[in-house]
Image (cartoon, rainbow, N blue to C red):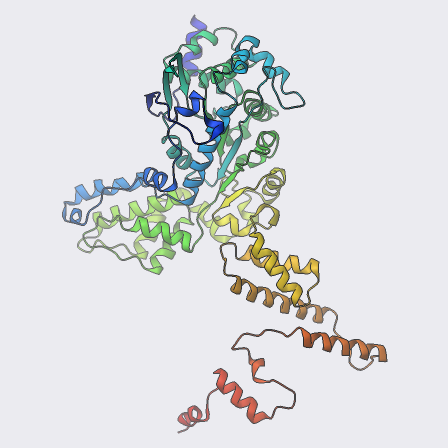
Length: 586
């Protein structure tokens, strides 16, 4: 008993996120695979994007008349910005994935089926050890429908906020009592979010799991099982048993980069266990971490993500442009200075430079700048570029070295800060091991060069290839040029603009080829003269499309007189007229 108390003192743990508990209310399902399953029917309805955006948003209480309040009161109002969450596309993507992951994972875990009951008779130790047969079925006869995915990204970009705001849309515990007029007494644990133990140990994770479940369900699993030797081999099947008994819909492990500090082999063992939970037991697993975890997840956990239809997410810092403008415009309206400061392009750019597109830093900088303006701004209380720079240099000193690395845009320097940017060889390996598309958002998206991992719009891609072929480009070169244009303009869908850029690439490629292999004009044989003649003929059938202001448009043939060339240049607006020249004479 004394040993058990010591363990409880060492591993005293509460879940990092606690949701609501509700009594089961069963809802009819439109999707056939979701019907007659109490775990699915007790869930909330499938949410639409508008609903998710309204629920995810955490907006401060703000009104214009609050500017007239006292200084101290306004300083307290500014504190609200610390909790500000602006719904971004990444939040919607995470919720959609979570919604599919939980429901699809429950499809094979209907607690009313014979196979589900048979698992408890067989025992989870044997089920885990036996693994799957050649048909992907476990020892109890269940074929897992669960999947897993990872969310990786720069610190402060909102990975944890995105997953937590999505989890809180669902009740954490659902109490069942009667289903279809039959007794069904069960405490369903819809989701559980844990932080990876700081020592990165699998045993620590198991004990944390037991204590978290006890704190939520009022059970006594920790005291019951931690006293029996507490070896990992004993705890792992127990954890799988509890997860199945209480219908765990999703297990979320945050700060997974802590695994990188483990002894050799430890990280792989934990990831292998997550793979077993997904593939053998059918419990969906979501891993969250910084780029430091990328190398770890390139290995065994990838086996649990095959054919899941989810794919991983990389959340990098925001890109300066439309994405940044939307975010900063929404944030900027929450001001409590005496007079409002209009958001200018210069202020937008300075906010980006000082935060480098990291959401958490931008929010804190904006909050600190308002505090400074109200506390020491005397009557003006204005937000200026000078004030933003001063606040950043004095109050955000710890992050300045990291921001300077990002500003330099030097890949070799960024490799030294793997929490903010992954090494390219590690990123490349991560992308190669992923059999599904990886959703990449933010700054890194524009820098990826592996086109097979970036979603290319196939219709536009084919149109660009066809255009290049029409202008005499070889098939293999046509594909390369089309990919090059698409990768440079990922968010552009204007086909005319993309075709124009493609033709520019065709011209550049042709010019480069001429420089590398120039034709000799003096020493051509008769056959060479014939080849040049054929080339000229081919060029006539493939006219070069020039911009409207291209100077070559002024010369339409070799015999055009100089006066006509001058008139053409005047029409193009690139040389002054005679009247304009006369005005310059004194």
